[in-house]
Image (cartoon, rainbow over all chains, first blue to last red; front, side):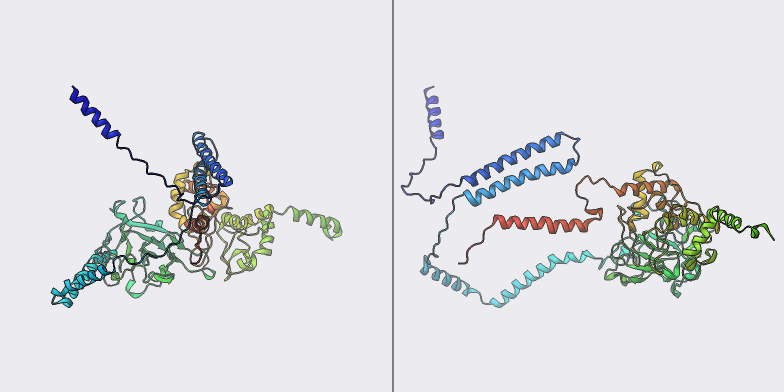
Length: 333
Length: 236
């Protein structure tokens, strides 16, 4: 019993007695004595209480739902509260904190002899190597190739080697065209001056996200068509279908210029909203304005026995933005 | 001698009455002759300068006249909303005359209250926002300027959708049904005063002015704050 009590008392003394002893005070001041600045103090203290007021206002605004411009008031009260705290801290730092600037010269070298010794040690330690240059070459080779290897995945940014996506589209000979509500498109529904979008039948909504899926449909008067020889027969009685994906950077073409009175007005054109690449639907989608580098791929279409539009094959060229590799491959028919 | 010639005052009175009691179509014909004939040709047959008005109907005349698109101040210009040269009765007369030129569609009567606002937004973003911008603030197309729709009335919106003025595509009832058109009109009406719950709308035109606010107001304020907080060291 006595031993336990002794143990407890000694433990208490050890733990509680380990307080830091206050260092003895110097007789001289270390920090220079600067005069007080009651004006700045008042400003700093006032700003702090102002911040408190704004914070309370935030809670009040939050509670009163019916205030107009509620979101703006919430932001204002919170922002001003934080701003007031910041202002108070700035005033304190600039006007109230005692500062002193002292200039001291650089200290001279402490151990000149030992520093020279160290240099000698390093030099003599390298004496053992006989093929220093080869070592340097080896290190350069290892480090350099490692650096390049780490950068190599950047090639995956563009389809340098994987152009499968751009060669394969969901269009095949005989595939019917459907509109955005999955209804098959009749040739008679496509009117002049109208602008329509279509997809291959049987594709889900996710499948429609493929670059090669969407087409734009417009009808031009037959006498206005000027298709080049390799695209003869790609239209269906004046209805032409082009890839919806701009060949510049891959945005969807969503603008159509449909003039009411040809002589005075610009010709019909498919325009991309991103950078205004303009394609002429009458001559195979050639670029008449804008940064696109090649003409719009055209889908050959025809009208089946029941009057619905069907594809007669695949696009005549790569769909999608003009990466370096896509000019080389052609899609399978 | 006929009675009319023997009584010239009576003849004058008869003529005056006849002139005042002219049908709107006849008044329209004389207005047409004064303002439209030189480009659109006699009986609206069309010339090399302007299209034929034979079957455009009251719908087109009402649209072009009430917006001030016509008369065009200068050939070759894009028609734009501008001064309306005619008062209400003159417009009615011209519309009646143009309607009488053929067998065209009547002035549409949209019912936006029957439309659905969210369906209208979906339809507008599918068919219209590419050129007119999602908040109908207008945009650009190569060679033309799709205008903002702030001043367009419900009837004018419906008319423009069906006509497709200048280089705007036209949307028939098969492409956009009347009920869908009601929804689109309702959306455009809403877009004139969108609910900007988040704060400053900056004209509802999108990320470019918002970026300008960030750079020229917020960043400038931050730089100013740094100047206030910091202190320049004296040259040593």
